[in-house]
Length: 536
Image (cartoon, rainbow, N blue to C red; front, side, top):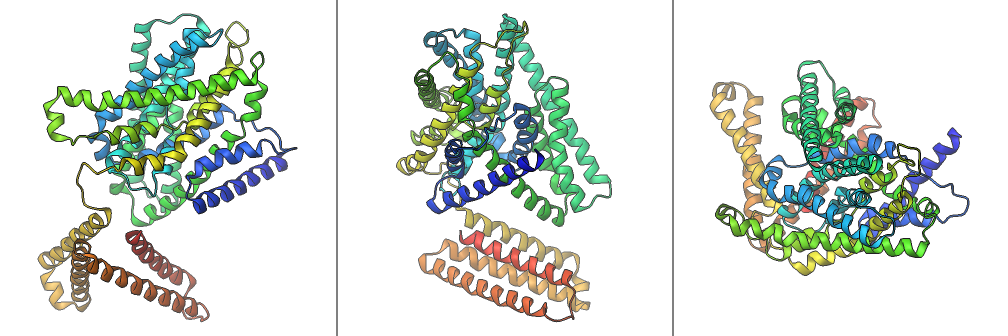
């Protein structure tokens, strides 16, 4: 049994890698290929049906994925766009849940208002990974990506809280609005508090204990699970605990992490999050047989019709919400009109079309219990699971495939009027080089005169400052200046290639230790990666 399970996991991983490579070859976002690939695999004869345990998603997959998203979220952008983020993460989730509840009660036989709210809580939150992976490689304003990333951090928590209260209403048969609002504030507030408290505890461990890069890396994986488990143990929001804790630790990380820790942890997290995301999306596609088998009294035709209707409904609701949410606050507030550029019709359109559903929706649907408190079969559970699967499939495939075309059609301009990323990077390097040169001149004048090594260091820093200045000037110049910069990068890459060949030649001699050679190779890799990142 253990061997077959291990072989199945390895086979799924190989399928993930092949589908991701195919998606990259065709220029299509990998979550779309993975869901469709899982859908095709579900029809393979002899392949066992793989049922996702909700606890597996909520406990194993969700904390690290949320933590990584929070870690790489810009706190400055998050706070700057807090109003549109809150309107989407809280307002849109509540609005979607209400509309879905009313429509489901009206058109689906046997659906009560409480069941409608339960379905609304399940299918209301867009998936963060799907949207960001589709946007990766497409030039969009930072404002759009910042709002999408910020929304995705919070909307999972708000939708799961709606789901929790609706589930309690279905099980108990009663629902009191003022009690639900009070509980919502308590669950959210305490989740935030626990996340911040646990994060500060880990910060103290990193700061005051004699950790190593390996220990620090493992601690970064332990932190989201501790935050999530502690919050859920007291029936508070584990999602908000992970998000708040991840944001805090990310903001404080420069005080406790050295360069080796950042390089090691970044590489490990990149690989692990890729595997987790890949497995989750291919497992979504593999849920089709399970969703179909559980339909019971509903025909497949009816279930598909309900699923398509709900898919269109959530897409339309999000689009309708975007324009009032974008322009009504501007109409009533002079401060907003003066401090924020108008998003135009293009910004709300792109944000509205980027509402692909994903893993949180499926996990919530699967976590609906099989029976109620009195032992009866939970009403409409199988239909809700199938509708959720259809909504995920339709929004992910249809919206995911067409979002790049929508972005090209909209021709989004960046309202922030910021410099291009490559010029920003050159500007940052210029400030860093200037700070180093000024510090050496002001703090070490005597050492520079009497120590040739320090004098050489100052010369090197000054040379790098001059080189960065020329790079920035080339970026700001006409096409001939940019061409000169591209030629410089090509020559530098060729020099690095020659150095790498010389390093490989040194491995045939017994003069240098392998560890020393590996360190030099890592430095060459960093230099090459930096150049390719600038040229990208």
